Image (cartoon, rainbow, N blue to C red; front, side, top):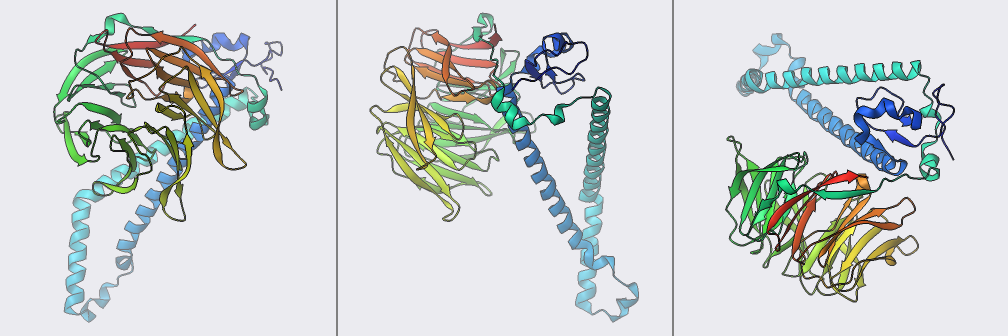
Length: 489
């Protein structure tokens, strides 16, 4: 199925892409003749495949917003229930009250008076601010509706699901280009790198230390050095909803860091999580669950109460557990270890715990594993020249090896560089031997190597920003933290 442009002067041209810029006032599906109207935000033009993922992410955000609104409504209702006994209070009844009732009445009213002086004013300000935001959203939505009516847009007539299946995807070739002048020398080993959600702060391990950099347009400026770890830092994760950093080390400890009033990072909790080094740490979307793996052969599930506590331990691995990945539905965790097996661990609503539902044997142990979506995951064996792609079998609900991606041959002994899948760019980041591979997933579920970056050493660690704009690496040949920027050709 082909979509044609509805602009009168565009000769019924075929739609070639979609604009997702929030400020754009033009028709969002665009043809070649429409392109000049989008010249100020070309980076916000996308293909149908990436639009599909963008729509899904938008729907998830709407659901999260609706959930937060409902939680706020419940909180307000409970607050209202506290005041309900006094709304219908008749002062004429006061002479009939006993001592204990009068005492309670006075205490409650004093408490409410205290609320009014402090929390009540803050609450009212927040409510007024919320009303203002809602009115602004309504105004913008009304303006957008008027604009669409004036331009006779017919997007609502499209059957989106069929569209997504029928329109071929146009993916532009790309490469990650090194910004040489932004490289920073670091002689000590860097085993972990992380960027915060706004790509404004970069954390990099430096032996037992963590270096915090300001990250601006690919330039690094050192802000702080954290020194609480007793052994080399192996993992780093920034939280998205909270301004927190989580680090793991070779001693099996996990440290939670928060910013203090002086805008400096301080540790808020230290956990002795594993009896050997922390190898991988992942969080769910709500950031109320952490899964960690270690050199002690275990996988641990942590939940947040007043502090983080261990809820469950998986002991099915017989050797070091190298990497973990959580699927989009957040009900399945996969793990790979040095014991040549992949565990598929599913959450049981009935039993209220995580259960190993499959054990996949592999010829070689693997350091890297990553969900691509709920249907596929990628696995990198340490030996050989392939990445294995596993697909979920809908008949038996098990993952089967379906495809292989061929790489340069070599053995890999560096296991802390995580495999990542960047949804916005449909891009798999994979390290093997002395190469970093950038692999594009196409609309028909094929995988194409778009770029391979060769290093002079097999000891490489790195991280890609969640938007796929920056690739940050360290290798023990250059002894540099290097920044590469996404460039479309």
